[in-house]
Image 1 (tube, rainbow, N blue to C red):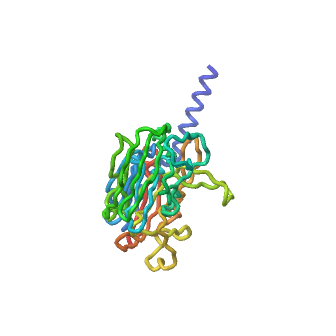
Image 2 (cartoon, one colour; image 1 turned 135 degrees about the horizontal axis):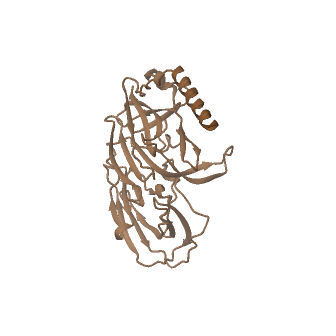
Image 3 (tube, rainbow, N blue to C red; image 1 turned 45 degrees about the horizontal axis):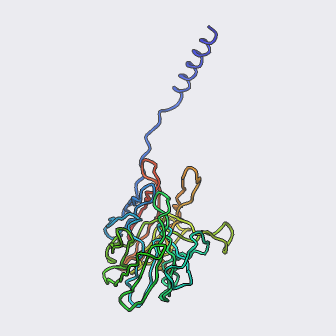
Length: 330
């Protein structure tokens, strides 16, 4: 009986307190400022998709799975650069031998990676047309499993093409392939899947401005400018043809005007927007804080200027891998 009295008293108190407070009023959903568009890049929770975006139309013009290709060859005039698919954490090891049968140690720590800046001279394979054999680590699948290895060597190059030979890790099944520049694109692509094939994940170079992608980069230890790890991150690369970006982390997004643009230095490094517009809160829960104070001022391929900031890294269901951003034209 005493227990019943306590329960009844608790219910009465709860009812009395509830009646003292106003009912919750609905919160007005956030709305972007006038003249500003909102878009969501659907990279998926496993960051499996590479997504190409065009500023002028506010459209995602093409997507591809990050495992669709292995090598890309620059189509830029006067450049003879091969890039690894860093979305798979690909890297190479120099065997310092021209013998296909040279034994290799797949546990080596002397792997070479492409720099994420996109500079041709900072690729792992820069200047490697030397007849030597390189061990090519095909990286990790989206699920995190090791894909395997190939051996590769670069035979010759011209102003318009490069000739490659590659084989299985034991030196067998040697194949030759020629990659030829295509002036409509930034790169031509090759995949080792299906016995080796040319693929076309990227749209034409005049069709997009930004690429949302998983990629490998140097991540420095806190407080250090020398100690780093090659680490996989999720971020944004710019179109290497005609796009440059400046970063403003001090002014308010809505307050930045066209007149402010002369105050900034623009960069055409591929990873100038990069990944640090967000901060990881908890590696176990995968929660992030988006740095809404960062504004990216973009000079696009048609010489127009834009401002962009990120507002979220999750979709309405709370799944990560959905960078949400606001963008406006000056």
